Length: 319
Image 1 (cartoon, rainbow, N blue to C red):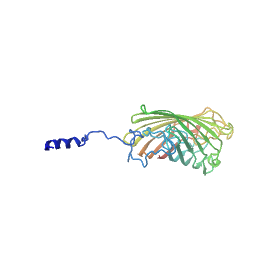
Image 2 (cartoon, one colour; image 1 turned 90 degrees about the vertical axis):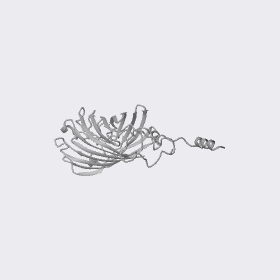
Image 3 (cartoon, rainbow, N blue to C red; image 1 turned 135 degrees about the vertical axis):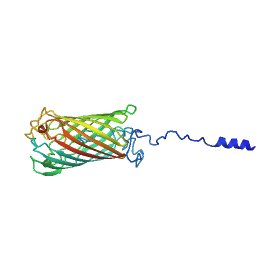
Image 4 (cartoon, one colour; image 1 turned 30 degrees about the horizontal axis):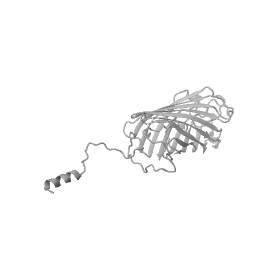
């Protein structure tokens, strides 16, 4: 073999160089590539198949959506995932209402478990309340427990659209001294979300039906959420919530209801409406950690119900 032939053979066996401007392709193809994070895009685990496809991992590809914050007990997102959510809520009562002012603090823990890609278990109400209202003695106690199922019936990654239906059952296991333990309640709901790049919309409609019409009120609730990701992992948000009392109960002779906190069975609320707005922001540190906080204020006649203002913080630890 000549020197020239040897050099040619060496060049043929050498790998082609990689151009410096080639795009970097993520190896984690299950997550939404458009999702941004403040600290790191690395997860502490991959998605091994546990028992069956979708268990714990849920429906991937929608991690770009920020989760709603206001109305945390009934504003269920259409995203099916597994997460633990720590809830803190401080609520101020209007001084001109029958509650006669005061405030309420709630600490709670929500749990969601993806059973399959599209089916999930949701446990959205529990925790402990500290009530200091003018019309009631200062006290503290346990909240009612609510759990249910959620099913994603529509998902289209190309248009960044997802929708789900579900229902929860609320026990009357809470303490009456903090306005809990009044009635069993079923709450079917439908939720949908649509992304437009860095801009996201989400909505929910929930019907709250007491199992005993005398002890609870039929209530229709709706919520709307909008956020815009200014930088990776940070998005200001606005939310609007409405609650309509559809029936009277016979449990307490009040003209104010329990809003989203409880179902009091008030005798003089049918036909009344409460609307409040929330502003805040969400911080997505990693694919496993998200924090949201909002301040909310009542937009309708404050003396007609219990909504003056509130501050809500949600910390999500996701699978």
